Length: 113
Image (spheres, rainbow, N blue to C red):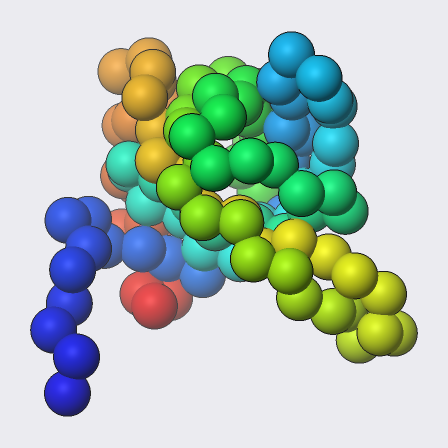
C-alpha cells in the first residue's frame, strides 16, 4: 500500500471557490480541503507554481475567507458530460489565523478523505 504523504487531514468538500491570478479569474468546485491546501476542479488550466488567490465561504457561514496558494498539480479531466476540466491541487502559502482556525474546525467535523 502507498504511504500517506499528507501533512494535514483533509475533509471532503463540495462548494464553490473563486480562483484568481494575474491572468485569470475562474470559478472552481472544491473536492477536498485541509488547513494547508485544497483540491478542486476548474474550467481552465493553471500552470503549476502559479500563485492564486482563493476566495470562499464555508458552508453555512456568511464570512468570506481569502487565502493565497501555489498550484502544485494541474491535470486534465472530463466532467460527467465529457467536457474538459482541470483537477487542481493548491498548497496555501498565505492564510490568516482566523481562516486557518475555521478550516481546522470544518475539517474536524467533516468526512475525512
